[in-house]
Image (cartoon, rainbow, N blue to C red):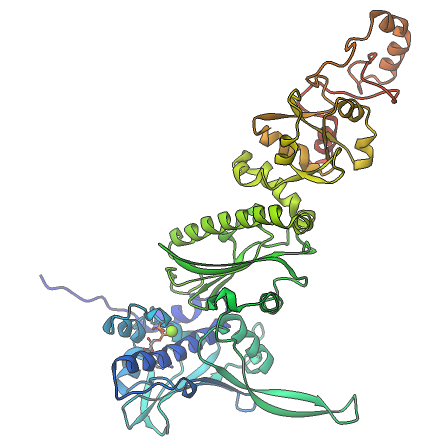
Length: 558
Ligand code: ADP
Ligand code: MG
């Protein structure tokens, strides 16, 4: 049977390509820079097997030239270039990737530096440009060609003059419209920002002439202005460097540059994994709580890079909610990207990375707790509440991860202690882990029941955070010891003459009855108690919900 080829409505396809793939226009620059980087890498890989070629790293660079008067943005590279045929094939055929073909041909095992694979990125240029002109001279060729297109209507290829091997792409930037401005793509600062954001770790220098302002000699108000060519990108990603070569200052600088926070990192975790999945990650635990941390506005997530190119600024799937305070990035060469490079085709690799990171963060926190107690307490001050929320949510599913990380104030130690520490010093006859809830340590300390439990020689944990008691209810036990509120009617131990004598009850019957009527609906019963020592009265509960929990539940919106 005759097979009939699909026909593609190329004009329609191109329009789709240009307008529907990307959520942000600025990524056009990432795509063109990535192509330029690929083109230079290709010479590098060719030189590995071809003795007639030499590769001097300093000859290879990308140059970005905005021109406000002409309204053009030019991207120059000194890469492998394209022949007339290649211009036609690679830029004239949608979804044709010369780079993917190159990877396959050369059987580059380690060819992971080559970024291209889908054959669509180039067309992103049309999101911001009316006309795209490509002037290219291929390696080993004497002739240069100009490819030019105004989008869906097709393209032309004509001979051109170009001295050096490489490619020059000239974008004629669109005019502003009522709802869209394009001027920003001609603005030096904005361009710098986009380059830093997406292409900071492209391994070749990305150069641009930038304006330098220095105060005129002897004057604070007048400035000298001149332009100077500067390399915009950092090139070598810090996460690919050897840990031993990096200092605390290097990490702090990275933290500040990446704007992970205005504070300093309290703890840095740098990890490289080369197993079933390969990735590098640098994670930070901030010192201070971000101002919006406990609000709806706060967005958790790590930066996700594929081979040094930014894919997602906040990949939330990489962090569980209880570690949402962690900042940082992950770079992996094993991600299967979708065509826009904004998402992943499947999340198997991502899940695996997230699982590893979760374990890593937990272990690092545990070691901080063990070895740098003071730092851990600073951390806990800022983010402890989030860990307790973590225990509470997911029905205690995260118990294993979190129960050793949470801390409470101890009546005995007068400082924060872990549950492990509490249980460790429990007297043998102590049946429960006791806690008292209240507004402040001071108030809990003054509770009559605290005195009672304390006199027995037992330690009491002070719960002052709303979440505390709820979280502990989810835990139920720690090392098989149950938690017990000191305000519950059964404390699990006998106080001397636990039951008040009948005569005492009788003698005071009138008073108790009067109190009960006065407080009707507010208390269930009024009784004489042997629990009290230096206090006249105390509250106790016998239900599941303690007074403090009730207060919180009542204050919640329905
Ligand atoms: P991809 O990069 O995914 O392959 P693109 O649409 O970005 O897809 O580019 C298509 C092809 O055009 C590339 O694979 C490459 O062969 C070629 N190409 C694009 N830009 C350049 C350049 N600056 N130098 C050399 N070849 C390029
Ligand atoms: Mg590309």
